[in-house]
Length: 304
Image 1 (tube, rainbow, N blue to C red):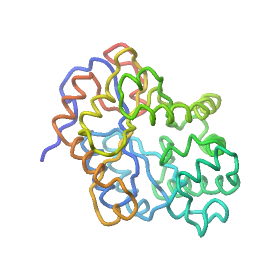
Image 2 (spheres, helix red, strand yellow):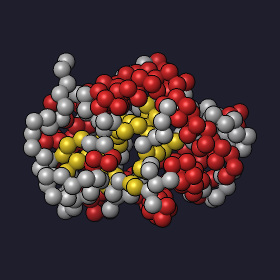
Image 3 (cartoon, rainbow, N blue to C red):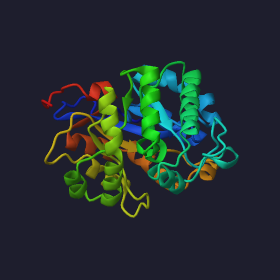
């Protein structure tokens, strides 16, 4: 199948959109799917789970695709479920990072071992740079752990120390009015927005650049077609953010993905949508062009 660049040859009407595929490195099937989407202009960013060996194996190939097609590549900070790079003793028993519920609980209670969290953040950043050969264009978090208390402070400090203000960060803050209007996983999106407010304040104080609209959360059940949900994420009635971001999880199902993730079917459905004409039509109808972080922040033909 020939996959065309969305909106190719069509006039820009409203804005540019950062579409970020999370979890690069989780499995060969995820990497393959994201490589195709990046190479065809269907996404504009991808964030890497650098604690997996697949990241080291695939990073240079991704770097070439990203350079050729203007795709941003970032760190997908991972602090749950998988084997760590820094072998912590308290954060994760036996070097395996804790489940999301335990990490969130200890973060809210300020019981996370700060030194071990800081060491894991550093190790994952080192792993990115060593394999990719360049700093990340942005930073976000697997299961949004980057906005949790304790983690967010340590992460902001490490980003500032390494990259100054040159690195973008992902904000999970979205105003409640558009969340309610879209009606897609509204409770989940609202919780992420509240959790993200502290991180957004820290990022702003540090002078980092960030998205000003965050979308993409859904229940992953596929009770509704993913395309219908995505069309809702594109809705900007009542407001025009300067740098909107939608996160997604496309991938091909393979044995390793099935072992590491419960989202295999949803990943396949997302990939199918992003390679479809329906995706083109939805972006055109909403007036969006897929663009990297810096380009998405520039004024376009719609006058943002």
